Image (cartoon, rainbow, N blue to C red; front, side, top):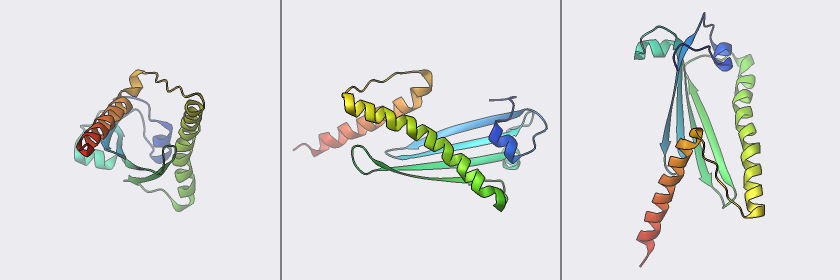
Length: 151
């Protein structure tokens, strides 16, 4: 998005004097790796590598490894091009983890309810487009794997 107010986490990292351009790109590597690349630069600058390198950039990686039908090991890391003072690092990591924990509470509740009722109901809204594509991609991979396993 171009010419927007900085998001709170970006305001905490850099002293932007006004509005910003912010880009997030998502990459999925089946079956269980994803990457989010986020860039924030002052509005009105050309989006060149040199300008981007002077802005805020993070690359977050998530690695999912199934343990069972109901449990998955979740690993994550985040690369960044900015310094976080040592005394703020715990708060920085905690803020990243809080986002995950909030999502985990909701998703775990959905999973428990679906297991208890046997009803798996999907509600499709625009923001679900990428996860929907991911599920379909995984299903095609599973179907192909099962077809190859047939004698």
